[in-house]
Image: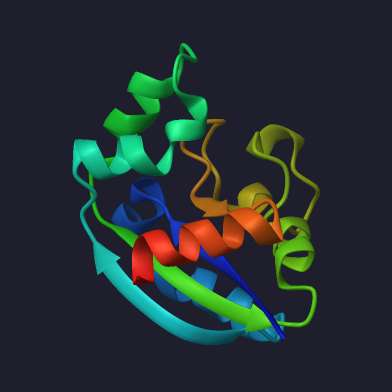
Length: 132
């Protein structure tokens, strides 16, 4: 079993889509290991997205990610990272494959409703960021 992290972003929590996302995860046979709802501070959002430091969209991303609660979900299953990336779809919902989470519920490239770890290494870092 491998672990990964999914965050339900503020646009989806505001639209009451938490249950929908969790249902999709369970149907994809993920085990929910830990889960919590929280409000990111600007400092914590900047820490989480430090990889984007210096990019022109960082301030907007931080503002969005601190605009409402997020749900951090630690997940477990075989091939967790790769399978989750396929389940959520492309970053831009307009380019996401039909039936992916971002195709279904994403609004635009910033408000794309979910974040998922993009590698096993980042999954471990992101898991530790939210769950210690």
